[in-house]
Image (tube, rainbow, N blue to C red; front, top):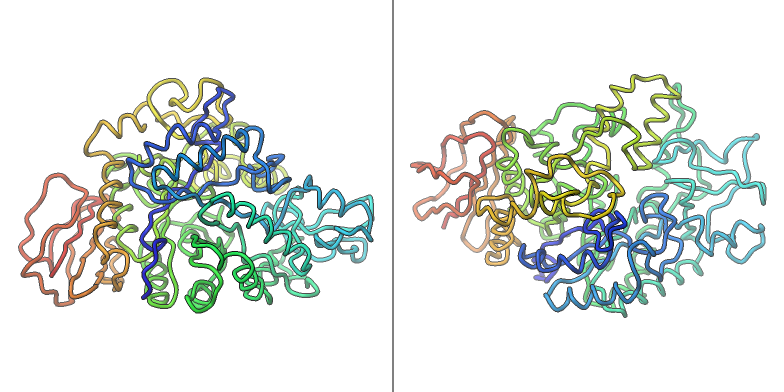
Length: 561
C-alpha cells in the first residue's frame, strides 16, 4: 500500500459561521479562525477543511455560491483569507477548501444570464426543460422537500434544483462549464490551498432524458436519486478533472457521496483510477433513520453499525482509502446520537473517538467534537435557522397535519442546527463566541462544556483527542494496519483487531451504560501485551485479554507483539 501524507493526516472541519466571531456581529469569520489557530495546533491536527467562505446570498449557509472567486462580506476580505492561509502554513496546518459545483446560487452571474433567454450563451450552463402537461418536467423531489423544479416566468421553462430553488444545478454535460470550473479550482490551488472537499460531487452526472421515478402512493414528488447519484458520466468527469487539475498538485481530495457503495468507493478512490483520494459515504449516518428517511427515528443498532463500518474497512483495504467521521455540519452531535450525553458524556465521547480513530482511514474531527459538544433542544421552531429543518417542519406540520411535538422530537435528534450552534470557548456570555448577538443561539450547557475548561482539565475529552492524534502520528499500524471485526453479533461491544508488520492492536469498546463481558474466540498472542490507550483513569488489571469486564462506555486498546 502506497504511503501518502494525506493518509497519515488528521483533518478538522471548521464551519466558519459558528467557529469564532472577531468583530461582534454575531457571525463567525476568517479573522476569528486565525485567532484560534494556536488552539488547533495544540490539538495536533494537520489539515483544516473549511466549509464555504465564498460570496453567497446565504440561502443554504454558503453552499449557494454567487461568486466562486470572492470571499463573503460577512466573513471578511480576501486579504483576511490570505493572512489565515499564511498563518496556517506557518503552523504546518494545510487548508482544504469546499468545492460546491453540483449547483451554484441563482444569483451567480452565469445563472442571471442563463435565465434571460433560451439562446443565451449561458443557458446551457444549467438544466432547463419545458413543462409536461402543464406540470414539472418530471416528478423528482428536492432534497429540501417539494419539487426539484422551479418554473421561471421569463422564458416559460423550468430549471432543476436538487436542493433549494436558489441552488440551480449546473449542467456538467457542457464542456465550457467544466472548463470554467477547472480554471476556478486552479485559481485557489495557485493561491496555495492544499486540497478540496467536494460537495455532493457524485450528483454531477444526470441520466440522459431525466426520467420520472416510479410513483409512490400518496406522494406527488419522489426521490429521483437513481437517475443522478453516481450517474453515467461521473467517472469520466472526475478523471477529466484529475487530468486537468488535481494531478498537477500534491493535494488532499475527498468527495461527499451519498448513496455510494464500497464497490463504487473503490472506483472513486483506487490509486490506479486517477479520480479522488477518499469519499464520504453515508451508510452509517442512515442507521437511525427508518423507511421514511432521516426524520423517521428508529433505535440505534450497534450490530448494524459494525457491519457497515467493517464492510468499508475490509472492502477498501489495499484498493482505496476510507475517510472516518462521526460528525459534520449536516449531522447531529455523535455523543448525543450514539453515546450518552447525560451521565456519561465524557466517557462516551472518548469511547466514540477511540472506536473511530483506531480504524484505517483519514479521521475527520468536526469543530466542538473534541470537547464533547452535544445536541441542542430549542423550545420553538422559531429558534432554528436551517433551511432543511424549516422546510420539513412546514411540510409535516402545516401541510400533512402531523403533531408539532412529534416533529420537534425528530429535529432534536437529527436537525442540522445541532452541529451549527456556536463553538463553546468559555463560560462567559455567548460562550466567548461573540460580543454581539449570535446568529444561532448558543447551547445553554456552555457553562459546563467549553474549551477553556477542557484545556484546564488533563482528563478532558480534548486531551484524549490530542493523545489519539499523537498515537496515530507515532504508530504506522493505526494508519496502515489490516482490520478484522470480532464479536460481530454482540449487541453492545464493538471490538476489532488491527495487524501490521507482526504487531497487533486489540480495540474493545462498550456502546452501553451497563457493564459488559468481552469474550474473544480468536486466539491472540499476548505474552508482550501492553495497554495502549483507554478512557478510564482507574486501570483494572486484565489477566487474560481473551475475556474481561468492560465498564459503562469503556474503550480499551491493547498492543500485542
